[in-house]
Amino acid sequence: MPLRLSRETRLIKKGSKQVELFNLKDETDSVSFAEAVKKGLGKHQGLYFPKQFSVFDNIDEILAKPFVERSVEILSRLIGDEMPREQIQGIVEKAFVFDAPLAKVTDNVYCLELFHGPTLAFKDFGGRFMAQVLSVIAQGEPITILTATSGDTGAAVAHAFHGLDNINVVILYPKGKISLLQEKLFTTLGDNIHTVSIDGDFDACQQLVKTAFDDADVREGLHLNSANSINISRLLAQVCYYFEAVSQLTDAQRSDLVISVPSGNFGNLTAGMIAKVMGLPIKKFIACTNANDTVPRYLKTGEWSPNPTVATLSNAMDVSQPNNWPRIEALIERGEIDKSMLVGDAVDEQYTQLAMKQLAQLGYISEPHAAIAYRALTRVLEDHETGIFLGTAHPAKFRESVETILGQPISLPQPLADCAGKEILSAQLSSDYAQLKQHMFSILKS
Image (cartoon, rainbow, N blue to C red; front, side, top):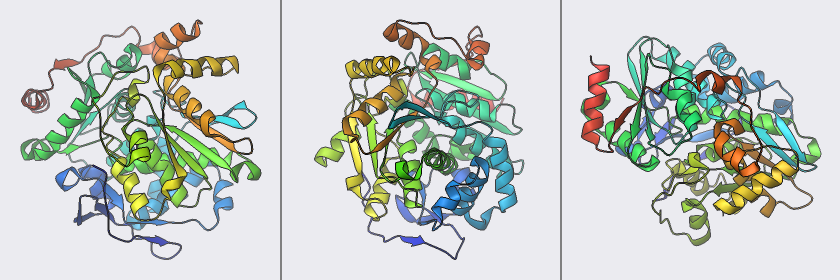
């Protein structure tokens, strides 16, 4: 169910740099940033979230800075003085080593391309930032990262943590419900990366992760942490590329800006809303989904009624019970985000394919997730407004469907070409938690 909060929140314009995070299900569970990163989830599977946000009063100056320098400024505000600024800078310089360019599609529509990292997906930003943060704050203690993926998280997390000392990674994913190239990008690494193909959908994988965190034997015995978008470090890293997008627009374009976010677990939209709260000039957000339309229906009817998850072309968005929604609900309930600026839209398979063809006719090759965001944007955008839709993955990650729909070949970028012929190393399990628990202890305690 969506969250209902009674607590007032304070927006800090200037002054204190102390940042406190609290559990959205239990406000007595209050932690520091480092504790929130290491725990992942709070009591009762609650999400950690800042009690307050620092608002930039010099937004034009912030937007004029280079990407890395600006990101250090943003993350310093979000983390506070718990980590020295020099330490945050070192983390950012190692994590954000690729661009997030705006690609012009029409005179007033752009795609924010978030797929120029090592695994060709937007989750490289959050995954790499989290890995660098954990490597600093863990101080050599053993950690097991347990996460579920509906497609791109697995690769981003696997590559970000691959080879790091004292950190093991266990990634659950729904068998047969992600593309083969997506699967190969994170299931062929080996070493400290352990992957498990689950006979079930993504929601079943997420439930296994939640159950593991509620199991003290596993949580304490294996020193569990989650690298899903529920982890606050991943979420805060994503705030930075919204600023990067707006920095590439003119002043006139910034004044009437609409951003369309393809949404599955809703971490991406949450990050955009945090950027808005911090002062980024965004007029409206579009929360667009595929047939798994729990949020669009909720925004229209006020009823939270998840349906069974269905498989679609945009598999990374095949989520019926998005874990990050309570954070968005908190921003709305606390008065930091006006609910009227959030539009929900669901795009079916037919219109997803149509949008891909329309983009191709405009000279822009895209994949299903971005195509959904484009389709939703064109339904809402007015002539005087500027629209940005998020390109969350390289089209080649969905090569089979893109080639079939567009009727033209897609070349493989190097990261995909390198893993295409490798053997998948995954274990295969049912969605029974007892099996997963036994498997984890057998591979991590051997």
